[in-house]
Image 1 (tube, rainbow, N blue to C red):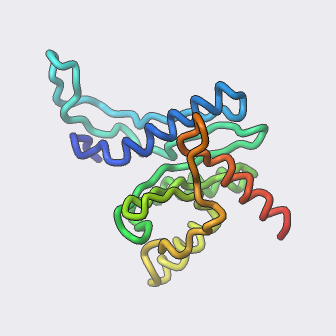
Image 2: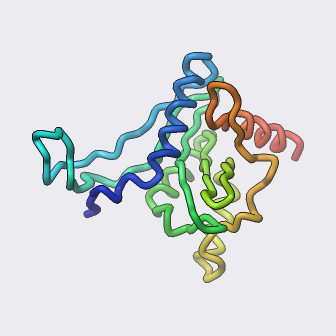
Length: 179
């Protein structure tokens, strides 16, 4: 069973930016996206500070976010990397299975990926990720290289939208229509 401790907050800045963007999307009635909390059971508590210093995960999580964008069901995970690639080991099999099932039900599954060293954010479609995952299962590359991220799907900041990923999502959907 997995444990949470102070190192368990990796990616919290990225998630905070996504949370703020999602709130702005809700206010503008563009989307309704909810953060899915990972259920934990506290083991060590600091009563004075009212903090949890050690806990274990009760069950496996699915994705970080789920919701609806203008009638389109979406689910996605936010990942960050300090490498020049997105390591596939950072995405668990049960998450991939959930995203595949979501995709099979005509929902839109994707990743928001932050490359720390480049300071860049990208929309990574599940289909692109899945292609790299399938190849890795056959002994090929175990990561999605930076070069594989479509520059047209780079996520920018715009006003209250710290990570305006809906623009990248729209570009992705427009490209699907063309194909």
